[in-house]
Image (cartoon, rainbow, N blue to C red):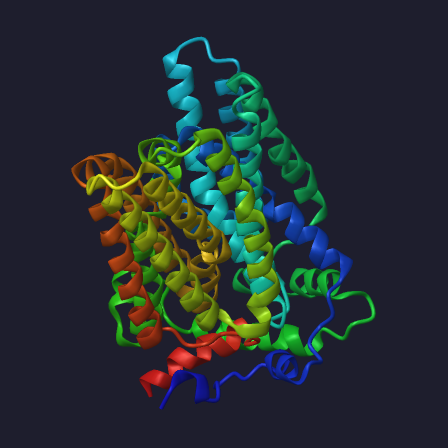
Length: 446
């Protein structure tokens, strides 16, 4: 029987109401807290488009401890701590006196974003009502694209010292804003702070909302999970976690090999090699991502994770094929305009769909892991994602020099395999509460 058809053991009235269209309303508190927490993704977009592979290496180190830090000091505490690191990193770059200042600054940015990007997604997933959770978590990709657009737009006219100062702005906004947002109710349940859990939910759902049912469901599901031993890595191999771990780790491993991060880092070189006007091409690329990111946010909770991810993968696959064909035409000594136009169109399509669904895997990872293994499994998935992203960023240039066309044909094959992976493995989690999703895995085992 398909996982989507199973009735969860700890069925959530919150999730049931979502299907009927009467889910908790969107409150100003939810919007403000999500905006504050997701500011970090603007920082990530700024840093990534500026510093590339060294940032990914630092992110890989931060990902290793992200789940544990979030469990020990809370989601809000972890975010507040890494904001300090990010500000120090940006300032080290802005006022660098030598190469080591730049290296330390970039590693601090990478380490901070490695912790921050995962924890912020978890916070949003744990605080947002299920009927709008997908769109709010996907807003992270919109913030990344905005950061990339700012850096690509101003990078040619503003010295990098000033760009680093700009990077501190979202960090300062989040650092101050975190004093005014509540801790995640589900983390509060995990540490036994019942009164604070209820206060947090009440603040998020509105003063007039009855939160007793939702609070009870969070507590009940939490208690059933924590009758089991505290999560360790070997537990991830147990049968009851086989499917969520396979989904999270599988997506984290395969997606970077679609080449998105490498293509982003070397976009200027790709356009130049193809004979495109680099300034026009990169500016178009950076801005085309924003409307497609907005589209992903708007459609996420209407159509669901599976169909949107498959459309995203198919679009990126087609874009990669067009780029490969463009370079193949160049290799065959066909007119330069033809090959350059084909690469240009393919790159714009590739990045449009990259922006449309690049945040989806993080949404899925934030949803599929049960609370009692979330820190361990989440850290593992984030580490694998950043590790493979760093490897791809490192080897991309060698692969591109080996065969420009062949590199993109390989990336397209990876996206085609990912479509099959999603069809086989991924259940639809649209409008399901986190407790309902957790119950899917329990019932599959039985």
